[in-house]
Amino acid sequence: MPIRLKKLIGTFLLVALVIIYAMVASIVAVAQLSESGPLVHFLFFLFSGLLWVLPAMGIIKWLILEPRPKG
Figure (cartoon, rainbow, N blue to C red):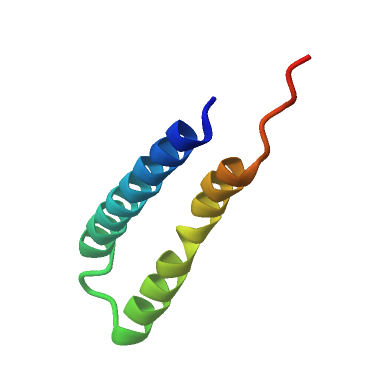
């Protein structure tokens, strides 16, 4: 796969990941934390704010992998 195409796909995947993850985290927060205290809110958003990094690291790792030599 050409590197430019790979970077384009990776960019779209990262943007989609962030948007979808933020929406899902917000929906979960509204549905489950409506009657919780501020400490629970803080811990949830701290945890969920850091959790998206794991799939993003996988996408970035895929982006920086060198293509296999043909032959």
